[in-house]
Amino acid sequence: MLRVAELSAGYGGFQALFDASLEVNAGEAVAVIGPNGAGKTTLLRVISKLISPSAGDVTFEGRSLAAVAPHDVVARGIAHVPENRRLFPRLTAEENLRMGAYTSRRTYAERLAQVYALFPRLRERRHQPAGTLSGGEQQMCAIARALMSGPKLLLLDEPSAGLAPVVVQSIFELVRRICAEGYTVLIVEQNIRQVLKVVSRAYLLEAGRIVRSGSADELRTAPEIQKAYLGL
Amino acid sequence: MSDIFDVYLLEAVLNGLLLGGLLALLSLGLNLVFGVIDVVWICYAELIMCGMYAVYYLHVQYHWPLVLAMLAAIGVVAFLGWLLHQLVIRPVLNAEPINQLLVTGGVLFFLQAAATLAFGIEFKNLGVTLPSVRLGEMSFSAARLVAFGAALGGVIALWIFLSKTYLGTAIRAISQDRAIMPLMGVDPGRIFALTSALGGALAGLAACLLVLQYDIHPAIGLSFGPITFLICVLGGLGNMLGGFVAAFIFAQFIAVGGFFFAVEWGYVIAFIFFIAVMFWRPRGILGK
Ligand SMILES: Nc1ncnc2c1ncn2[C@@H]1O[C@H](COP(=O)(O)OP(=O)(O)OP(=O)(O)O)[C@@H](O)[C@H]1O
Ligand SMILES: [Mg+2]
Image 1: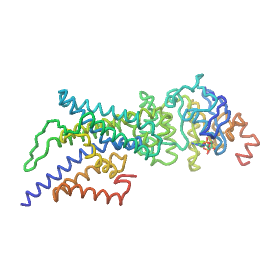
Image 2 (image 1 turned 120 degrees about the vertical axis):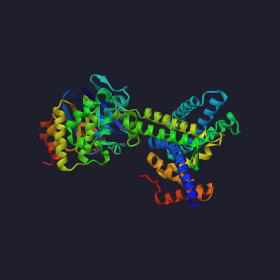
Image 3 (image 1 turned 90 degrees about the vertical axis):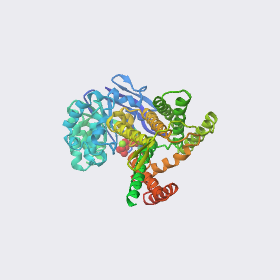
Image 4 (image 1 turned 30 degrees about the horizontal axis):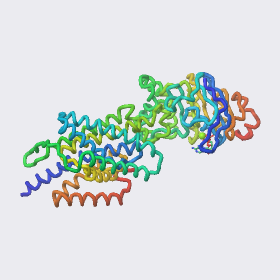
């Protein structure tokens, strides 16, 4: 479904991503794991065209995204939950969801009902400014906002970052449910132990390069990952 | 004796209310544009001047019915707002604020000079005088009543647009996080252009109301531009509700101060109040 081929990207003169290639098949949940500053966020930004690559290409459902304008990506079926959630703090939770449905207004009511069924807490908080929600609620709202566009592929950038341990658990539980609902998910995480329980495959990104890939089990048991990332 | 005094004080307060409506409308477009695009249109009052000339020429020269001329003028200034954004603001969107001030300041002088060349320096008058309305002992200018009603209508329409529609929500959202708008499927450039046209339309509406009360000349912008900026700053630049509150406070100082002393003193008191507030809350009454 998504194919990233030899992608390079950076900021000004600084290169953050080198020849990264990966693939996500329909219905699959795939993780990109790696340490701080590895280039995980950069990778997602290139896929949703917030920045353009210096080389390489991204194809989605067999078509290149190279000529697609950034604001048309979501209409193609890719929704991106950005790093740090990035809700509109002074809009209410529900207005944030409305923004998520900007390109698919006809199905708004129906999707809102679906999203509230998935996140009952958001329904209670729907008239509250998003900036006043708790961290976990904000993350739910950010994911819900992305789901409002009815995406085929969901990009998640560190949904567990900055949350209390109990809340981290419930967020991963939600991600698991979203995957179970049949969404295709590409998730970026530093919480490697948890994310490997949710996805079927993963790529390890280090210093801008994809250095390993494999099934979740393979990566979990790989000695170098156990040593460097799982503290075993 | 004291009864009559009370009636005239009440009249002053009510006149202040009417003036407040107009000042609120004046601040609205400027605040909208600043709040969304983060650029101050120094030439805002000159856009209003263009709108006043548009009403004048269409109505007096080309004999369009007044209401039609006004609607057309709103369209003209909306177009000017859009043009201002595309030609002048867009290239400096990411430049230093001082550069943005300088270019829109340049447009101010350009518009003044262009108006002088095109329309001459004579004062022009619509030749429409609305009667004054009597209410018991008190009398009010009908032009002010119309201005108040239209200003209130404009404010309410804008509020409904911003809170109830997708486009309006996007306009509020973009001022909170510009960078992720594409992830929502929103083209920020389009929202900016639209907001500029909307800011222009509000300037056009203000022009229609001002032209009922004041003569038109190329420097007319200087007589209400500064006060518009003061009100926006007083309320918190970019904060539309703040501008609204500030407009009514400011107008009361002018009207009631003018009642107890003289009109000029009303302005002096209002400006002293402004300076005091700036010490107390440098970001404005409702500023963050
Ligand atoms: N806007 C930017 N301008 C310049 N350099 C940047 C920018 N954003 C990221 N970088 C740099 O690019 C590199 C990759 O950053 P990126 O945010 O993609 O990493 P990451 O894997 O998401 O890290 P984290 O886990 O901390 O979120 C880092 O060295 C970072 O300093
Ligand atoms: Mg990151």
